[in-house]
Image 1 (tube, rainbow, N blue to C red):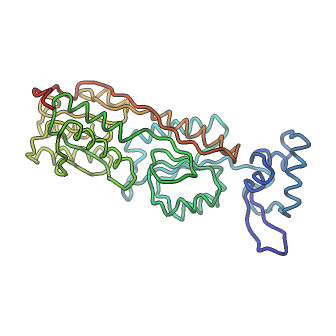
Image 2 (image 1 turned 30 degrees about the vertical axis):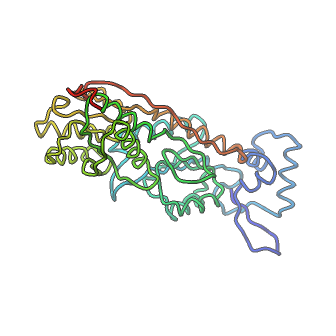
Image 3 (image 1 turned 180 degrees about the vertical axis):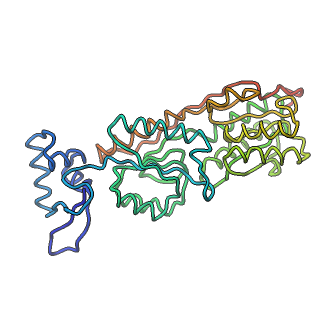
Length: 355
């Protein structure tokens, strides 16, 4: 619902139902119920809301979306677009699983989702206002210049897998640096010292940058020098893993193991090495990251670091709706745990104990 001021002493402004709720010290839903009369509200609360409306001079804009208390109950979901035209959410089952859990949890609470595979731009900020979104879940890292503008919209926001520096939005993530440290440390302890790093695009304050830091920390722990030549950067996609396998096969760098920052990359590596006649794990070991269901069915079975993908989505919805219903809710920053799943894709190298 949108409100506009009738005051003759101020310029006309547009207000959302959240402004009224904040001034009255109640939830957005309570204001909607007072206006629509569809649910019984205590007389004391009802009078408090009506008093705020009367004192501020706000009246419903009859041309606005959400007329007569019809809350859109619409939640925006922003998924990163790594390259123009890429259908990332369909090519990587990480996003399919995450989105599925978000949609299911949202539907159970009586809300609906509006999914956008886009960057966080001014166009999306406009969309939030035009569609009167109740809240937004943002996956990944975007340009920081838009965060302050997003805060000004006073829409509840939950960030998933983001390391943007802010004190405003809720955040759900894993400790990506530690998880990749654990992944790399496992491979090194299995006797491998020429360990490559296969990654998606490495961006400032992004997930891949944190995982690179974890990789480097594990090398340092075992006294192994970091070499930029062993870092293979592409996009997070199956085809990228196939390409990286080709680059590793031609590199002549003596690589005996590859730490992949995503299972979909690791599965592409398995396929790429197979096409080149390079046996996994006999000639080269591969470890993935995410714990996708597909990793159980690869040949060989893929060793991986499993993160709670579905739980991330469920928690994002829980936090967002709690904030929608309680605008004064304090910021929450939740870090979830990961676990190492051992299968057959990492070989015990002959020089174990040399590191």
